[in-house]
Structure formats: structure tokens, C-alpha cells
Length: 354
Image (cartoon, rainbow, N blue to C red):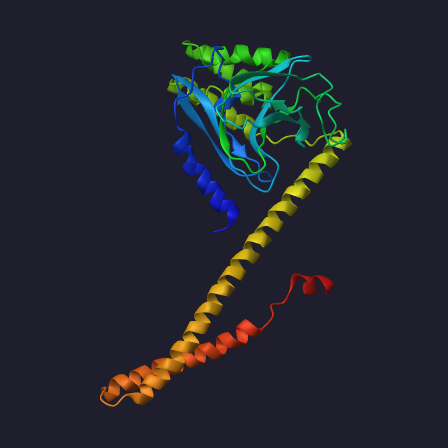
């Protein structure tokens, strides 16, 4: 079992160890993005996330596992707009003795342009964190990874990341009330979401149509009502999400964004291919070692079997003949394997030169 898979399984098993009640948040936090779908970033240390109930409230339980990388990062894909000079808020609970530093990242446009905040030192217990979206204290590839720029564009948020600077340390955090100040479109969306939950069926129908007309910026708000115990609302929300996500996005007109998007797709495709090749190589090497061990055992068994067959005096002739046939087949297989194990496989580099 490779290390990544092992650590992922270990992290998931650890969830049961950390499934405990935590002190109630002293601030009445409104549920937000923490109730959505989260996943581990492939390039980070491994970990696991799940929505956990505590004190009658839902929190995002984040397991981070130490590894060779300097951080664990957890991603939430979304779509909405931020208010200029607005704030992103979240509450983080940590009970660890060795408190990790954390940061968040905001991903913008279809190219998922990365904007990372400054790191924050956590205190033990609940931490109320705020991030100014217009402050020039975010870092990007364009800024040379220095915290000198603001988030842009604010009307095309495509993802959020929780980043834990854990290195080789493992632990757990709980997140609640991950919210933001919406832009003008977001304020309208909030009104449509309210109508979508109305007792009036005609209002729900009109709200669904309005949300579909808004498009992708409405997705985050729609996903946040995914656990409401009202089938008539969930059906409308699911229908709106399906229609919005089923509408192809227009190709970006900004050449910079288009180039970044093409770069991202190329890097993702390359990383996927590279990982598959690495996993395949490790798998082949493991199987080769196992086959070599079996080959050695089979050689010893064949020699021992021939000797024993020659020493037999009282065993039935038919049984001796049947065993001899088995040894002949084993010898033939060993000759084939001997040729294969000694043959160097054709490398990718050889094909590349051709």
C-alpha cells in the first residue's frame, strides 16, 4: 500500500477518535461554507474532512496529517461575488497543545487564480478570524508570493481553501460560520433564496427561475440550503443547480485569464499523468519484487521435488508420473520467467527519441 493511500485511510480512521463534543462557540455563528463539500488538495499533506454535529450545531471537522509537505490544504469549490472592502469571517476551534498556524486562500476566475492570506497564530479554544478582501495583504503568483496585493476580481470567486501549516504534525480543527459580505448581486441572490423557501409555490417557482438567470454566482447560496428538511425547497434548489451547472461557460475574453486557464489545465493534465505513471511504476516494482521472490521459491521447490521424485521407492507409479508432469510444467514456466525477469523493459525515453 503506497504512503498516500495509507495516510488517507489513517486520517479517515482518526475521524472516530476526534468525534467528540467541543465547547459551544461563544459567538452565535451563522452557518456558511463549512456545510458545503470540501476535499483535500492533491499537492498538500493528506487529511480528511466531514461535517460534524456538536452542541446541536454543525461544524466542519478537519483532520490534518503530518507529511513531507509544509502544509495541509482543504478546498471548497464554489461561486459567488464579494463586496468591495468586505470581510470574510470564520470561527476555528483548536484544542491542540502545539497550535498550528493557518491561512485561507481565495480562488478567482475560471483559472482559479490563487490569493493567499497572511498566516495567523491560533490560540487554544475558539478563534474568531476576519480577512479584509480589499486589503493589500494577499499573495499571488503575480506578486512573487509576497503579501502585497488585494483579491481580484471580487465578482468571480470560484473557491476557498483552509491552509494548515502543519509540516510533520497531525491534529484536528473545527470550523464554523465561514461567511462573507456579498456583492450587490449576492444581496439579490439572498432575496431569491428566501423566496425559494417560501410557503407560496408560485414564489418558489419564480425564485428558481431568477436564480437560474443569475447563473454561477448563485451556486454557493443554493448549496448552503442543501440540508433543509423541505422536499419542495430541495427539489427547486437541485433543479436550479442542475440548470446552472449544465450551462457551458463562455470562453474568457481576457487574454491573461485565458492563458492562466490554459496553463492550469495543462498543469492538471500533466500532474495527473505524472501521478498515474508514478503509481504504475511503484506497482510494477512491487509486483516484480514479489514475482522474483516467488521465482526463487519455485526454483528451490523444483530442485527439491526432482530429488524427492528420484528417491521414491514405494509411491504409486501413476502418482509419481503425475508429479513428474507437474515438475515439467514448473520447469517450463521457470524458463519463461527467467527470460522475462532478465529482459529490460523498453523505456519511455527510447520511444521518445524515435
